Length: 394
Image (cartoon, rainbow, N blue to C red; front, side, top):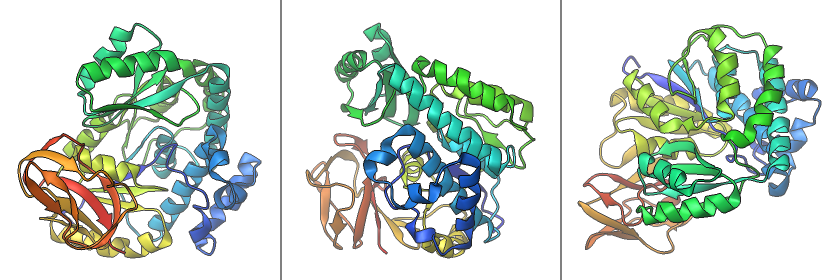
């Protein structure tokens, strides 16, 4: 697979789901849960198997649970012999990336994530804040909407083209959302989170985390880790204590990170952990890469076959072929995309089913399967062969 250069990416808070550990109980990688429980002083198995959605929404729980699922998946993937060229993680996922790269130990990763979750929970409880997703607006225009508000509101995540998250005071966020819409945003909608993460509201958490970071041994990563703060690789161990503190109050530059990873040679993005959020962002942001989510033992079993397809095509898939169990629906024409009103995630599709229109041209799925996500915004101008949606066929 000489033509394949892999980046391991790790999801952040929000990708967790109740019962997400159940598929792993009989897998050898599950043994990590007992080790982590001793370090954290918590029953992490219960968190991964029995916690309901409300409990998992709490920052102290969601961060530890998501990190642990990424560690389980990472261990399982490493057993296959697959090795990355680069690592990156979104927000919390940066801690997973640092463990995966050998920059910090697994035990220190558990300890830091536990402290980070508790610190951010305390900061959010002390200062009411939330986050909004702004869709269909360029980064600089979103920044302008925040500046025009003249309140406590900032950009928190640069996720993908036309997909930016802002955070801060709830009232100021509402005002910024109106400014964003006046500048042409398709939507500006609240996200169900417990705080204004990656903003100055997290300053108390940063100060608290610094104490835990100061007690951590950092080593030079085996493979480059790209940082959220500046979207650049940092091979020097001494850089990371400062970057970890700065990350809590700085925006996550994920879109920029994806571009820099591709410029460095990445042809395959493997998302390790729960959910498919990063896979969707990669599909919207960069072209000519293979994007694979690994969240279950079955995904791991199929990984080598999927990577062989990436090698066969040099990491570029033609038409609507993606990999073994996923397919893309692409635009048949150039024009403005209008999805069907009832087109939502987890909707079953039949082969030939209508999913929307590009101008007056019908867009139909060539495959049967379960819709995983819509990649084009309503009213977005798309090009011929541009991905519109993606579905899982098995």
